Length: 370
Ligand SMILES: Cc1ncc(COP(=O)(O)O)c(C=O)c1O
Image 1 (cartoon, rainbow, N blue to C red):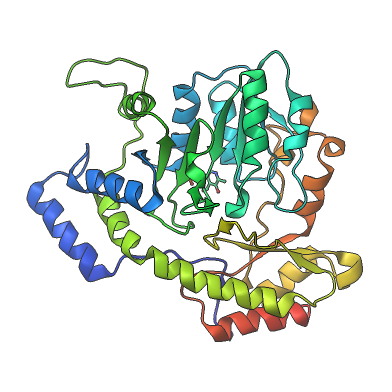
Image 2: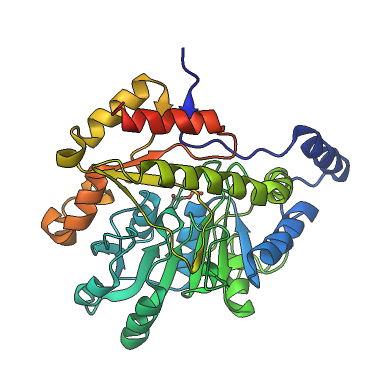
């Protein structure tokens, strides 16, 4: 029986280090409502990610919803169909109509050249996703936003530590939202954060994540409970020490895949960008059925049969959900690139525990077509 190879594996803190922190929590008897580990993790992440204002959250979804509230968005928001469903669900949850624009074919991020034609009188913002950690066309998006007086939120759930030209991607737009879910390069089991540019905005975000409390008695806004607890903050604080070596391990795997799969007919992947410091969170490949000989789903099933558990991120498209299917902008004719990519994509296993042998097994399977 072949060893099971999963698409990812969580980066766990060494148990003995976590136990030492747990002992402190047991002693302090502070497990929620901003203890020492919450504050230490916020500080440590700000330094590590080279950003000034980072607010921890209980998960990325609540953080995204809070970002929408913090910017006072309403009406319509232009977004991508090629992402995890949470990117759009949070719009619906906050009473906003998503308007979908297609993606560009090279990096699978929203096609900035298609945003302007989707703007109406009701548009208040652009919600773009740095999908797989690939930077969106931030300069173009910034110009469009300025021209039309729109806000910009980046869903940076995949972009932990990603930099472009030496600058953190998290500094782009009005707000960037991160996920620290177990499937992510850096995780706190469940968790997330909002990165803002100014202290005043951060203050609003901090009210929003704590029911709107300013102090013990004063409620200044209609907040929610988005706070991260001490257990997960302690877990994250330790993980942070190991994340760079986990990223290096991922980098080696990505390089091996690129080298080995470059000449396989019908298989393509996303090129590395010289000016981007990547986190190697995902390794999507795209299967051209005519050239490869079998389609993506046949390959996916065959890989599963040999215990290589790939994932088809991001299939089906968000626009395929019954919730969004009837939006005029969800029509397949409006989103040809996203539809094609979603039908071709398969994400290969990539994580810090994958051995050279495991990687070879995946490569052999792709070469042999399962
Ligand atoms: C692109 C994207 N946005 C948002 C989320 C939601 O984050 P969370 O699971 O932390 O709520 C995820 C993943 O989990 C994601 O991949």
